[in-house]
Image 1 (tube, rainbow, N blue to C red):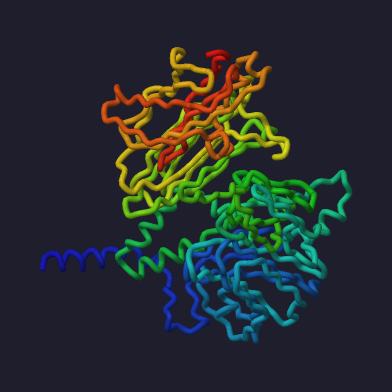
Image 2: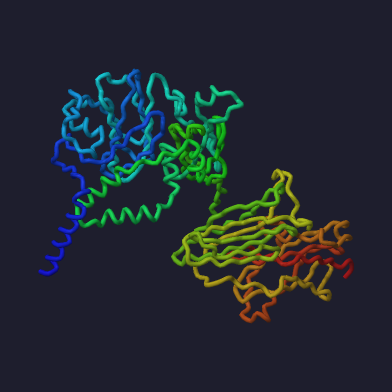
Length: 583
């Protein structure tokens, strides 16, 4: 009870204190001619006036015309949000009598407003684009009223009044076709063109008061430079935020209404024309000047961009916007991905013209285990090749590929992406020369992929890949060879190749078989035998073979291949042996 009495006393004190200065509040049920007493905002002629538009409130600007003014034009430029504005002419039936008891605080427009008369609506517009009313003046009009209103949220607009016929010359001229056209779209650039403005083409080259400004963003097209600047994210003044917070928490509705009307009646700041450059200094024009063609570069591939063109009058501080456009840059060129078949042996070739090259492959293991084996071997002695295996965007392994076999175990994914990249070529000599029939291509990497249904890891390899021949067991028509095997049951095949006299005399590396030449590249007539071998003890995993049917005194090169169900066949180091001439 005491709290209620205290609130009533506080309300009475406020009413007594503020009663003399409170104006009559405009009620929604009051007639149109009941206007509260407040300072009137006059609309000057020939000056750009900035108007702040609070959400949901109608701003009124009043102006009169000279007696000799036969025509007029009113231009309204919203900043970023759509607004409603209208122009009306109010005509009084009789001039207000001086003897009438009017308050000394009333302004002349309010006196005319309260007097008997008629109002004629001349123009109305709704939108966020620049709109201009041009027409003859009303000979009977006592005063003109410009009403502006924003329904969405607080915004601002600029207005300009011009008396007389013809254009005002304050705003830049737009061509008949104000659209921005797209000449070309690339992966990282877009070329634009637009019809030139008559304001720029009609000026001498020495005078540079007009400029084009091209803006690019990835959100939307802007109707004006003011809207583009608002989107940059200008921080609000802390004082303005504090003032808005106070308005929202005002306890007394009548005090809140009075506060709005007092704030609404503050005079509007009028920026000088030279402030346009400073006001929009934070906007970065990708193209600026008098050319009507612009190429915007350094864009991201496969991205949608919006382009806006503005013509700016730096003397008057005004601008006009062309009708913006948008374009989507092309996607980045992607290398083709080749699908590897089950057990397929593939020779991967790179062009010898560039220092860098890459190829992509995909592999899908069979079976529910989703496991497989990737085997690679570099066939270029001086080449640097790197393999990267990834799945679902995550890199599983990345390593270099040399002359020795590389085994990569694949497990736990339904698909794998294999990336082979040649990092460069050293001065070393290639083991496999370039094939002229391939048009400058050379075999660089030998690769095979296969699903492993019952395996749990990489297969074992022999402890050494050297072939040994026994001199005591060497005869005129036969030789005995030995090599190391593995604890797994595998097939070993022996191939022979007879050398000519010159090759035998040289006895160098040129007579040996290249490491990348597998059994698939050998003739069936060169195959001597194939045998299975298995030894659980790796130290005792030695197998031998007697090769007969040889000619006396001839040199032969023998090659042994470990044939496996998974992976590339392993080639042992070539062995050259010469049969005896006499036995």
